[in-house]
Length: 285
Image (cartoon, rainbow, N blue to C red):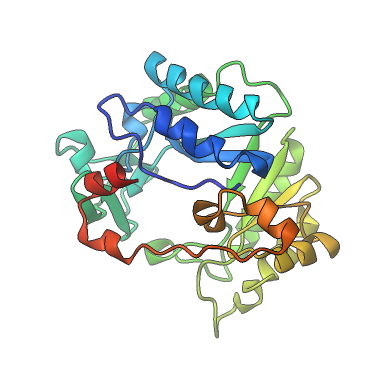
């Protein structure tokens, strides 16, 4: 099960609750669950009603979730986040969020009062960079070697950071470099950007995996717009070792059983969300 931001930590502590445990327990037939966005520190926070992993209360909340998942025979990874420039001043009493540079990504931030345009962030100082590295380490405290995976969306960038042919060698270098680390997997997102008519058109469809799979020697998990047929094809042709399903798991907690029996899949229907306040959506869910 791919990471899916569900916005259910609607409490002042940003802690997982029994609702999280119930949600993930319903989907333990996935075998491996990669959790929702989980910020590593208050400075990293930047998506409304998402859980963190920096306080004792949050750790207790996640322990309740993972204990439930383990009892049902499944495994679970935390997806550690620093939202950077995607955050918003609303999370920091009007102060600017910090990021790698002072470039506005020109995207939408999911603030407590709804979606808002991102702003120009302030660049981190060297001390803040060191602290952020330490915060990632604290959030992953006692993590054993061989249990670290990385999620990457190569070339899926728009706005000021739009991908182009000149940035492709940089991403190739990064993915090759990951072979030097003891990673348990690399979760790679397929194309979410429309490359039609441009120099990166070959990355559309299965092209992302065709291009980057030869560069990575470890276990590759393919994600984005996956169907049972496509997943089987990617595995059979060697372009992926595992398949991560995202949105289909929202409407189909028993997704593997439905694949096995050929049952019809429920479709996600959420046009009503746009008319509701984010906190109201969280309560309804």
